[in-house]
Length: 241
Image (cartoon, rainbow, N blue to C red; front, top):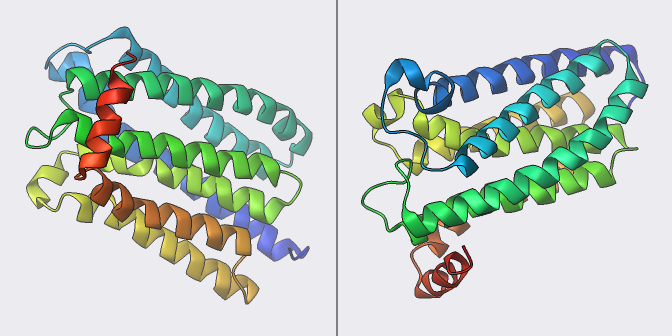
């Protein structure tokens, strides 16, 4: 990774914009069903697990923004120490998200498409959790290699964008389905890869590998959810809840 001041300054600005954009997209997507739910009405949350999941994800967004700010203000040591809390929070997110996804697959959820069986659609949130665990685990592993670490943390944020995009009120009007909530993050990833190549003359191999893995997961989960093998697995998974 280059040590010149200009790339570091660009990275700080880029991640500041990313943190703000990530927060705004999540707020826009979940305002009606969670953050501003009392003002929009609708059915109550199906269980306390959904609320716990929402609180943990909100904490993750706040942590992501805080970590970006700490790096931008050159408080690296505090950033590193807070990273340990991030590991604990990530474990809780995966655990609560797994329970929430399995319960939605078993009992149904208002956020699931009505024309797709709940156990089949459960592949979408479960893959979100799987990708989060892999990308964040990689970020922890490469914590002493800033370029790789930052790129994987960027991908963890992008990984959580599709659920928010699917809930933004404009999404039903577009009627694009996965083309919208998977296509837009894919475009963002490709743009980020292009920026990395443009600035450094090459693409960080860890960033490239993580990007390919995340982008490939989109069609894989869509194809998998329609198979008999997945339905058998989904029924078995939901039986433990």
